[in-house]
Length: 83
Image (cartoon, rainbow, N blue to C red; front, side, top):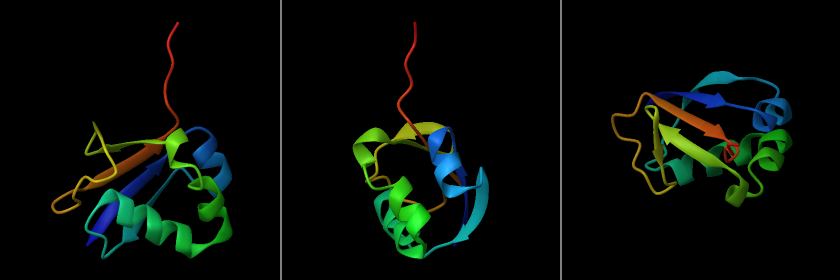
C-alpha cells in the first residue's frame, strides 16, 4: 500500500524532507517506523528515540500500535508544549 508520510520540526531536519509517499507492507505504525529506520542512517537516527516522537494517523493522534489498513497519511512530530 502507499501512504503519505509527513515529518515535522527536528524530524524533518534530520531526514531532510517534509513529506514523501512510501510504499509499505507494514501492518502498523510501529512496523512502518521499523521499515523507515532500515532505509538509511538518517531515518534510523531520526526515529532512534520513539519516546520523543508522537504520531497522527489521518490527522488524529494515535499510538504506534495503530493499524495502517485504509490509512492515507501518517505524520510524525515531537511532543507539543503550550504556554
